[in-house]
Image (cartoon, rainbow, N blue to C red; front, side, top):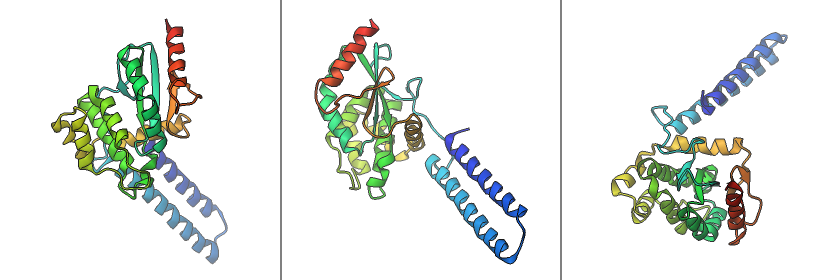
Length: 252
């Protein structure tokens, strides 16, 4: 059972328990009216949960995972056989993530090319609320997931392009057309970019976001090296590279 379905089930059980509790109480006019109000509110809550589930999964109710995910359901950059895995939890609207990418992209490129690391990108969409209703975080992450599904070797180039052209937090973000244009400029085929508008992986993005919070992630960027959270400075060139190279030395 998926997380959204479990959430719906929990809310339904809460509603049922509240109704049962009301039935065990002495009945008078006041409690009867109060019970109707409570039941009405609970029904409204369940309706919101059901509608949220439907919106997250799309009209057909299906959760679709992109192809080429890692075993832990992240987007893979580089060779899975590399000795060091660097996980990056990110939101494409997050200014701190943009700063992280600007600082570390060249070093990460070098380490990927040297087959020292692979990256596991874990997109989040909690900053959708900071794009004036346009759901920019979800739209951008869905686009990256589409690239992972159809052209996995272009995921990192596209991610860097999105951060190089990152909109300011609190704006509507880039348009769908602008996102598609950046993908093509990063080497993604136009036929793949044309699929962004289908929003096939919106529900997967939401699930990736929820999984991150369940794993204890409290903000972005969060970086893990072989499963251990990196606590050093991610906004200065050097500390992350040093930690990665130490991990690579220990893996030999």
